[in-house]
Image 1 (cartoon, helix red, strand yellow):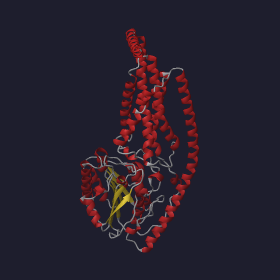
Image 2 (cartoon, rainbow, N blue to C red):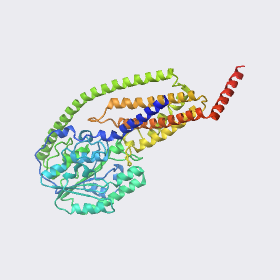
Image 3 (cartoon, rainbow, N blue to C red):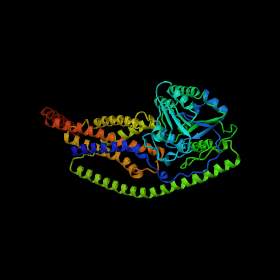
Image 4 (spheres, helix red, strand yellow):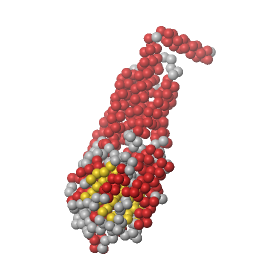
Length: 534
């Protein structure tokens, strides 16, 4: 029985680890349903800006955008507002959102593992169709190069000191560029490494602000327009992806040609930036966009404002209807798939419980509630305690994207596995009869695997597998891979634990000295019992 459980635990570890490894990439949809439809294009309005510079400061929190010389100077020259990012609040999805006007839930770009060319309409497509040029400059984030490399006339990025400033100056000096997209990434790197509430993070914000000041010396606010925003913020401990205010609220600064600096901007979202850039350059908004043009800040005659608003209404309604239709169709399929998965899980659970009962009656499992009460809860209590305390919150933001977005979950799982092994050893160390010890170890592993497997299986059955047209909520999006990794690491620990118990069993069973000591200890224990009885 112990050998069979060891093989089962090893197989479960491999399956669960594979599911956890695939999870993030399976959230992405390479070709979303909205891309199956032609873009909804409208007649352009007059061009009111010679050139638009769109700056996306990767990972800049709203509160940390203040007190920076360059950003504050642009605020004074134009207008200052707050924009809302989109869930999941991750770089690549929201970089795409800013230039397409399509949020991650619709675009299918849900995390940084997405590397395919984007199939939806973008502001670069509209600029190119109008015979204009667009360029991209970045230091540490070639994400738009991965997603829209073919849509830019020029791509500049390099990590050496001064590369961002030099590349921006070169792009600014090219009069053919009507649109520049700049993404400095130093702030985001510092946020992941040190946290959003750190001196290093604030220093990185200062450094990027200074770089922007040097880069934009050729900026002419009489002819050019600049928009500064961020893709997301950072939690105090470092991380983003969830729906916390600190990661969802980002700065929005707009100044220059075509902008009414006295305007009052109401609500704004990142999906609104691409249509607004299009209006400034006098080209149609990206045809798959779900955002509106921020007409209240544009210096346009009333008739053109009305035309933009009417075009926005038609485009947004059409695209929203298309998305809703695809969502309804997928929900019907998902309901059928989930029903089949629940039936499969119920069957497996009945089979498993039946096998455990047969094994118990045969003596291969010894259910000792004292052992189970000590050892079985050790893993889940330790794992989820670490996740909640050190992982900052049960939110998608707990995946801090340091090298591997699963690193925190893996680390917590390994720590909890060590705790589980120690608890199991302590619970069994008093066992003298080898058969009884191994049977108790079997029961411990079998029960623990069941406890770890059930929540992961229920999440799998409830939220299914790719394609994920709908994205789970922030908490569930963390709990799904967290539970997969919990099963994988627990199964690894169970495999090691049972392997050691098998080795101990056979070593003691064949060693006559150990057998003699065991018999002497058993005899002494029996004598003490009899003496107490007398």
